[in-house]
Amino acid sequence: MPDKLALPSEDFRAMAAAAVDFLAAYFDGLRTMPVVVPTTSRAIRERIDEPLPLHGADFMVLMDTVRDVFSQYSRHSAHPRMFGYVASPGTAVTAVSHMLAAAMNINVTAWRSAPSAADLERLTIDWLKQMLGYPPEAGGLLLSGGSMANFAGLAVARTAKAGAEVVREGVAAARRRMCVYVSAESHYSVAKAAGMLGLGEANVREVKTDDSLHMDLADLERLVDAGRAAGHLPLCVVANAGTTATGAFDPLSEVADFARRNDLWMHVDAAYGGFAALAPSARHLFAGIEQADSIALDPHKWLYAPVGCGCVLYKDPAAARAAFAHGADYTRTIGLKDDEAFAFWDYGPELTRPFRALDLWMLIKFVGTERLGQAIEENIACAKYFAELVKRSDDFEMLAPVELSVFCFRHVPKGFSGDLDAYNEKLLVKVQCAGSTYLSNARVGGKFALRGCVLNYRTTKEDMAQVLEDVREAASSL
Ligand SMILES: *Cc1c(COP(=O)(O)O)cnc(C)c1O
Image (tube, rainbow, N blue to C red; front, side, top):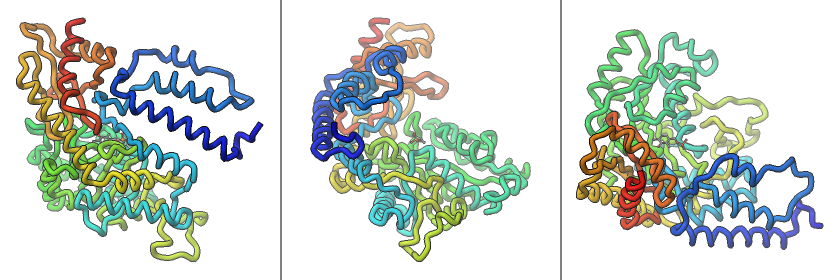
């Protein structure tokens, strides 16, 4: 029996080959699979439950379980009609880069721990800045996702506007309520971050939106003035570069002007929409983003990167150090200076960090930004085409404008006079169970919407037409 830990290289080769064979067939079969098959937690547990294993099992038996349980009972993110939430399909090249990173297991805490990986991360951050037109002197780092990126942005905003003593003494040192302004369409991770940072979720003030769900600047001004008059400290405004519910893009230049005039930190939540900067038709929306103090991005959304890759950018890296640098003796970099003394722990909440930059570098360098931008453009075109199909139909209606690749709509059967919200809710569950198309939901202007987000380079216009057919089919069985 070979040692299962210090595995002989021929066994390792056989395992990797079996895994790649499985994945190649998986990619080939995606289009003919259901997006998800209905099941229960109990049914899954019956397939996998066993006492703590004492002796190791054969790898090929494990692969059978991967195929027959984990793959079979998944909602397939890579399926061309997986439109729910904001689901990245992943890519073949990052499947390989992920394995390489995991095998080398480089811990990217600092340059000293990971010389080439640290430099590569700084290079990929430079590339992300270039995609957005963000200034070259800006800094940033990769982290687990958009929620952590919003957290990091707000943490830096807090020290920048309330003073570094809040890190040491706590938020009471500010002696005032610190307020964060978001649009009513913002992602809840912003409020969650405010809770975790001790700012308080109740101090995240919701700014009204206009008919297109963009932040209403007059309402922002009213709220900030009211906060000041009440003796609060207006800290930060969070603008959306693509909301999760509908893809609405706040007017970044106007928000930036307002933030500058009112001494507010400007954070842009571009977790969903950020990489639309690569699509020529969406580029104009990004005017003004270069003025943001911090930006949250999610390569694991619209850059098709594997789950677990978010990014925060800071216009002034020194402001991030004020929030995160700690100087414990066991992390002190002795005998190194400048670029070699660089440590990611001074710029974000994590210490041990995976080699996320390898995924990004392989993806961007292998595919190229031209093809990535084209794929993103096609996703937008698919969503716009869907809106056209809905407008031409007499049994559907759009509930929000298509600004990026999100489409919100509902079924309005001819002659229907009941509760459309309740009807479409039931319809959604039917569509999800049928497995050909997966949609999620949103509330738009108080109405229940069927919601989809095109985020997959495999999705075609035929798929968009199929969505309407699948919804009609589900409706006929209600
Ligand atoms: C998805 C999303 C987030 C949260 O990002 P995670 O990577 O899921 O943590 C934040 N903001 C917006 C606009 C999002 O779409």
